[in-house]
Image 1 (cartoon, one colour):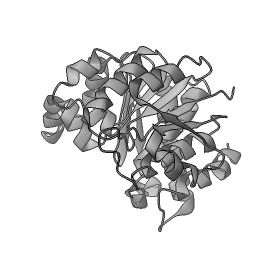
Image 2: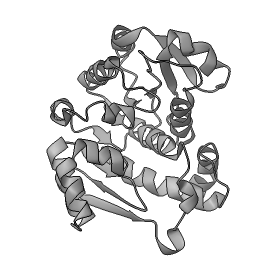
Image 3: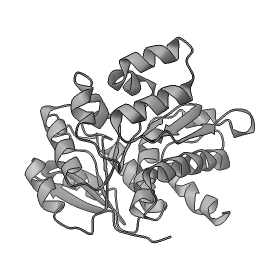
Image 4: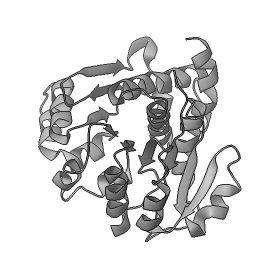
Amino acid sequence: MRISTSMIMGMFSWSAARRGQGGAARLAARGALRVGAGLVTLGCPLRAVTENAVQLTAIMIKGLDGTAGLAEVLEDTRINALCLGPGLGLGPATGELVKTALQAQRATVLDADALSRFQRKPDSLFDMVHGAVVLTPHGGEFAKLFPDLSSQLREGRSKTDVVRQAAVRAGCTVLLKGSDTVIADSTGQCFVHNGDGHRDAPWLATAGAGDVLSGIICGLLARGLPPLQAASTAAWLHAEAALRFGPGLIAEDIPEQLPAVLATL
């Protein structure tokens, strides 16, 4: 499996970039690095460079000046995977940053704020995405993007059928988080990660765990895995790392368990 270059683009809290809110992007970046992305760069507003730099060593930091800065960085064709959303903020700039990233036609993970920013007009997001995109909503974010499908879930419709339909509508891979995480792509292929029984890891319900998952997916995309495979593999690795650690897990622990999990494969 080839190890390639990736760039984790997170923490673009451009209009509301308050100090102390870069943790989500750093967690995603760490997940990508630990799963073998090779070179990971965290992009952030210029005023957030110092805060991130003092907490990261192996991860590169790039201070960017809005969408123009992102577009300039993406001229480097070695950057083959992006992750936007963790810590990005919900300001007007978020939509423009997502648009710029998607226009680059790179493998891209959209999570958290990169999804919630489009809750009023989800079709505007779906019009921009392409086949190399992975959306990673939790239940609340899924309801914002797919309110009718979320209603069908509450009414008892099969989760696999609903996520398949969401993936077809969005035109990309969709991973709906939960104890039974369901991943589907626009062709109808579907994987289910069942977290019940001996695979139950309730301690994964901890702040930042989803950010790590997005980073792991991005790292696997950077290594050349197709979106559906990257998302389903990441869901398994994410849960396996949590099971290996056990109760008391916090998000920072998940990437550090990955080498031991990978060594068993």
